[in-house]
Image 1: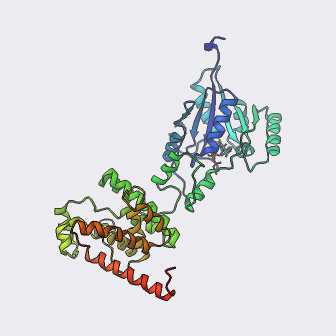
Image 2: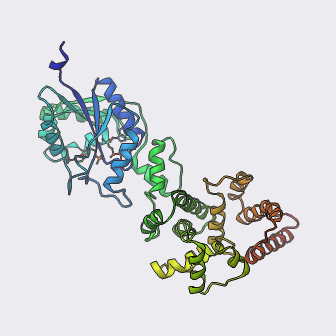
Image 3: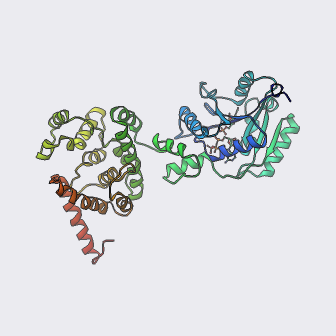
Length: 409
Ligand SMILES: Nc1ncnc2c1ncn2[C@@H]1O[C@H](COP(=O)(O)OP(=O)(O)OP(=O)(O)O)[C@@H](O)[C@H]1O
Ligand SMILES: O=C(O)c1ccc[n+]([C@@H]2O[C@H](COP(=O)([O-])O)[C@@H](O)[C@H]2O)c1
């Protein structure tokens, strides 16, 4: 048959996609191949009629995640038709608008999971909608297939709906569960594409955060080099993880981790001026290497420029460079995260990464044990604070061993 006379078969895969996951992608691909569709158009909803989520990603973020998720499939396309609209978006309006861009001979297939089919009669102008496009009601774990099949038969009978049941592999994945897992620091690997997982991480999605986190992230992104910014983001993530493990406040650890290098790229001359302005103790090592003061300077600047007043956060930022004796748990967390975050590469880092999940003190002591040789070969002296911190940690360790009759557990 002349290809010109055959219409195109287009699937519409609408969804909140907050975030998009393998359940969505599997569903779209199964229907595309079984119905011989020419393409599937992913349409992230603008403002969903039935959903209002706390901790949700914004519509641009949902659009970008969808874009990342589909990029490896040449038959998958994305439309921003709903994202561009203000206010609540409805399937009927979207379908009518898309139909206007097609030829009469083209056919549309609206792909939906079983849960959506059960709710169909709550959609705007549903009776018209289910005659306007072919609906595909796909099985989904959590919905009884018999219930789905009965519903489909009833919709056909009652409204003359163009709707078919489709059996797809059961993937018990939902966006709700993924958001919850991210919030609870559980793994979401293999539930969604790695690119989307990285996007969630890089954009700090689906978690409670310090109220200034997003603002500071934007500021750091413009202020720091790309490499340093990545280091800050990785330190933030690891600080949060360690905080959850050791029972510190996750939001504070994450925020301090993010901001710890706020002043790291300030040049020596300006750093020395700031050291003076903020009355920071100018010892010989700071005079010789002004950059050493970047932790103390960052804390002072964040306090005066952005009114960050939480002393625990400020201390963790302040002491992350040379430490101090009797560091708080939060200080130790940021100190360690800064050393071992995933973009750090040096001999011995792997052992520190393992140790960090067992003991922060031991990680710090082992790291300084590793540095000893290097420092003496370069004839460098430790900062006074660092030496005091190490002596204190060794003393604490000995006391623990004594109290535990010779064991450090
Ligand atoms: N695992 C899955 N298997 C089959 N269909 C699915 C699956 N996940 C989502 N769908 C379908 O994809 C469409 C869009 O889903 P949506 O973006 O609301 O994801 P969700 O995982 O259901 O989200 P949430 O958990 O926030 O409700 C809906 O029609 C839904 O039924
Ligand atoms: O039009 C409506 O009233 C309506 C109500 C609920 C859901 N939908 C559509 O159903 C699809 C899946 O949406 P959701 O909210 O389950 O992610 C998406 O394309 C929405 O536009 C549409």
